[in-house]
Image (tube, rainbow, N blue to C red; front, side, top):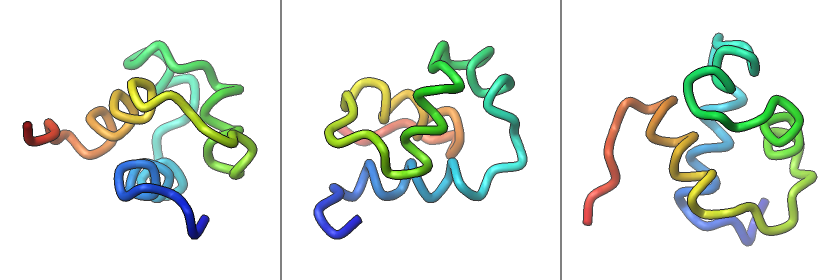
Length: 66
């Protein structure tokens, strides 16, 4: 989406491209499969930055720089 911040856009791209199932991601992060599906399909208007960060860190294997 054009108004997405870089972190959200990166997390969404990683989520759409991962081979991991939503259940596997849920097991690792606590983020519900419903929330993951809604994020992947642009159904969340303004998702929590903490959830997006947790997803990004899990899928990228990278920590965010302070």
